[in-house]
Image (cartoon, rainbow, N blue to C red; front, side):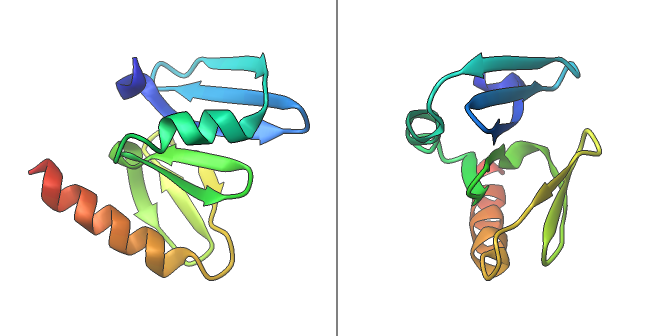
Length: 96
């Protein structure tokens, strides 16, 4: 389920799916189609060229990193912090 997905990371040709349960699923697939599929859902946002996160699980937004509820640190691309904060705020307003 998408609600169990905390974030997705690409390393080389491998895509890693990090789940709420703490499990990590590794797949060999292109990252671009994964991003395109997930970004159709308002809760997913690409924070960096190698990461797409589920805003439902953000704990702290810094200027260079996000801390997820599972204590993972996810980088924010340079100059993208403001956009991410705005989208997160909009997401939170919709969610309530």
